[in-house]
Length: 435
Image 1 (cartoon, helix red, strand yellow):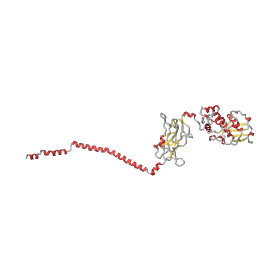
Image 2 (spheres, one colour):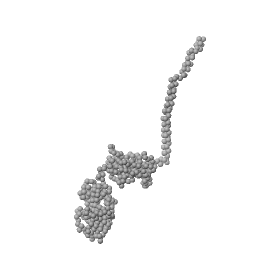
Image 3 (tube, rainbow, N blue to C red):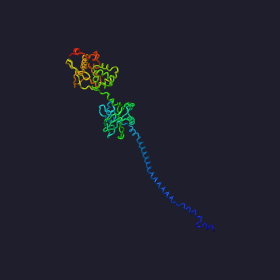
Image 4 (tube, rainbow, N blue to C red):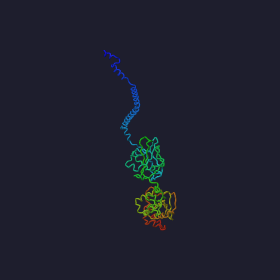
C-alpha cells in the first residue's frame, strides 16, 4: 500500500519527466530574438541580391539578342552588300608645286591654296559628288613609300599606320590653322599650311600629304583617303639655291638644271660673260658648239639635254630687237632667233628665208656681237616656234633654224672672227634668189 501511495503522491518522481518535457518545448527569449534576427538578415540579403540578379539577367538577354542579330546579318544578301567596296573617295584637286621647303606655304601647281574634293570613282570617270551634311577632314603627313605601286586599294588601318609624326623634341610636322577643315557640298579649301621639318630623317626621304575623314563626324559608308604623290621637303636655306620652273630670261644662269651656284659650270660660263638665262639661250641659238666647249667635257650629253630643255621652257615675252644695215633690217626675238627680215626691200618671214647660204648666218652673228646696241621694240608678233613647248628650234625648214643646230659651214666661230667687216659680206646676188 505504501508503494501505491507513493505513486499517487502529487510530488512523486513519476510526474517529473513530463514536467521536464513540457519545459523543454517552451522557446526561450534568446531563441526568439535569434530567429527574428535571422529572418531580418535573410530579407535584407534578398533585397541586396535582387539588383545583381536583375543585372545578370539583363546582360544574358542582351548577349542572346546580339547573337541573334549577328546571325541575321550573316545572311547571304546582307553579307554581299557589306562586302561591296565604297566608291567615294577624297582627292586633292591639283598636284603640289615642287620643290617644297620648310617654312614655305604649300600650294598647288597654280600657286593657289590646296583644295580637297569628294569624288565618286564608279565607272570609267571620276565624278564630283557631295554629302547631305558637312564632314570634318583632317590633313596628315604620310611616309613617301606608302602606298606601294602595286597596292592602290589601301584600308583605313593601313593608312593610319603610315602617318608620320614629328621627331622627338620637334614641333608638329605640319603647322597652320587649317589642318582640320569642313567638307561642304563636296569641297573643302585648305588655308596656309607648311612643313616644320625636312624629310631627310625617314627611310624613304620623302613625304606625302594625306586627307582623311574624322571618324566622329561621319557614320556612313567608308570614304577612301586622299594621297598626293611623294615629294622631298628641303630645309628653308636651300630655297636660296632652288631652280626656277620655268626660268626667266633675267634669271642668273645657275638657276638652270645641272648648273650649280658657284660650281664649275657656273664659273666657266661667268668667265665667258654668260651670266643670265638669256645669255645662255642666245649662244645656244647662234653657236651651240661654242657653248658646249665653254662647259667642257664635264657636262655629259645627258646633262646637256636636261639643261637645254629646262632653258627652253623660258617665257620669251613680247620684246624684239632690230638689227639694221643699209640693205637689210632683221628683227630678232630675245634669244637671237629671226622673227622677220627685210632684205633689199623684200620682206621675208622665218619660213621664207633662203637656205644654204652664209649671208644670213653672218648677219645673225653680227647682230649677236652688237646685241647691246640693237633697237628694242615691243608688241610685234612672232611666227617663230615657241621654246616654251619644249621642242627643238629646228622644226621648221628654214635656214635660221639650221643656225641653232650648227654654224660649221661658215668655218669659224664668232669669238674668233667677231670683228668681221660688214663691207666684206657677200652681196644679195649670191643669196640664190632674185629681188
